[in-house]
Amino acid sequence: MYHSKILSMVLGLSLALVGFAQAEDVADANLAVIKKELKKMLGGEEPDSVTKTPFESLYEVVVGTDVVYISADAKYLFYGNLIDRKNQLDLTRQTKEKLAVKMNGTRKKALASADASKAISYKAKDEKTVLTIFTDIDCPYCAKIHKEVPELNKQGITVNYLMFPRAGVGSSSFKKAVSAWCAEDQKSALTKAKERQAIPDKTCDNPVEAQYKLGQKLGVTGTPALITASGELIPGYVPAAKLAAKLLADSNQK
Image 1 (cartoon, rainbow, N blue to C red):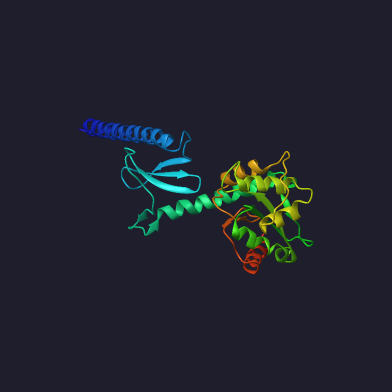
Image 2: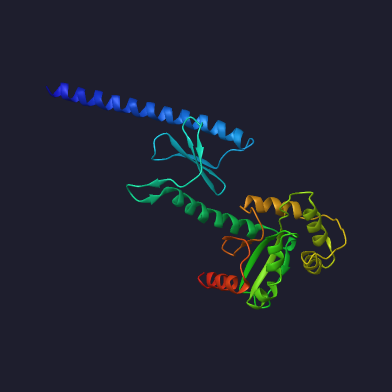
């Protein structure tokens, strides 16, 4: 009697483990298919992560700071927020918040290890914090925020410029960035170029391409791209008064 019960339990457990193993095998097979297809879509690169969601046959894909979803057979891809109605949770938002925290740390570390001498720096006399700006010579809003750098300096904010010619390596904006960086007076040349004044064409051993690639790696997609001392990315133009208030408040919280 007891033997038959024990045997039934063992057999039941064995069948459950077989079922679990089969489910794992299917999941592994799905992941293999998905990763293979995504690699094709990403031009040979691999996504940062692919994980199964609570929704059956749906996987979450993370590429940089982007979150998308793909079906188990890799035939369907969609971009949007996945909501857990039962628990009232925005699963996509949760993932993005985790990515943002991680990316802030990555940016902070990358900028801390970057060669500060390669930036065109407008230093504050009484420095309280540092703002890094990825800039494009031909960007109107970059020119607008540049006019407010003196006010940021007065507030104790040092501004370090890194080049991000949006049109890419070899473009007209790229060449202007090189000319500004190679000028004897970098700050004067940068200001003139942003004011649409002609500056002498110059070439030298320069970091413009490396800075452009660094920006891409850190999630910069447009200019101006403002990166705080904590690594937070603020896209686009922000008025000096509002920007200074935020940066100084963040600095005081450390």
